[in-house]
Amino acid sequence: MRLVTYTEGNAHRLGAMLDDATVVDLARAAHGELPDTIIPFLAGGDDAREAARRMLAMTSDRVVTHRDELTAAGIVRTLSGTDVALAAPVPRPGKVLAIGLNYRDHAEETNAQIPERPVVFAKMPTCITGPGAPVHLPKVSKALDWEGELCFVIGRGGRHISAADAMSHVAGYCIGNDLSVRDWQSHSPTWMMGKGFDTHGPLGPWLTTRDEIEDVNNLDVKTWVNDELVQSSNTRSLIFNIPAIIEYLSAAFTLEPGDVVFTGTPAGVGVARKPPRFLKAGDTVRVEISGLGVLENTVVDEP
Image (cartoon, rainbow, N blue to C red):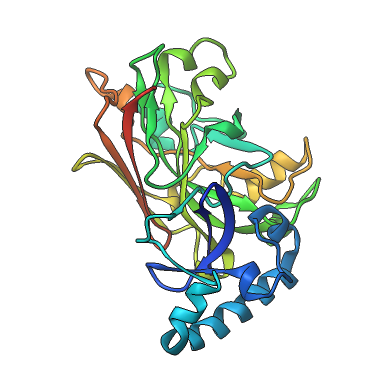
């Protein structure tokens, strides 16, 4: 399934993509027997996901002949509608964690030592924004950089999770852009101040459930700034894969349903260029990962 959070008026609601333009509201399709937002749904585990698959299949059978009726009931929504748009799949995660220097070529381009263990930092939950949403060029800096990344979302929580069992805790995958304010990133060794600005964690366009991806260790990762390809790699080049990341993180703290983890970016970031290149208002950043769709956001001056 491709799970989404969509906006209806001022509210966020849980849905699933029926096709590239049609969203099924899972709670309404299930007559209230499923949660209407994503984190309680993920906490529902396999039972909730199986019920959602049934609702999606039943709606697919009816949509051809009863689309108007389903639309009037709020069960089917069309993305081209003026009042419906995709938000981040998890609009406000409990935790947003990220792994730095997790591609050897990126570590080398920034003259960093290859890490012996995952380099972990936190992004603020308020950094999360959705596909198509504007991202802010900060008032306090002009050193805004792109970082296209694979992200995963925790489904089943836990502590002290072994690498062997780690994938059973993953709900699915989506695309992220770990936008980084490079001068503020160097304010402290933790990097946090340069990594957590509001709007600097675009996520989307949807959460592809784990069963839909045959091999998460072989996905192409590409980033464009405007029409220029600036990053091109594959997740097989990750230094620490998802099981290793989960084992390491959960040794320290409990992972919970809806937590988002950015797995790291490959070579091609702006700060490593000679001379460095940074984003400016009007630039569009597009990140594409095979099987996960496209995440596109435009830079605007911070209001």
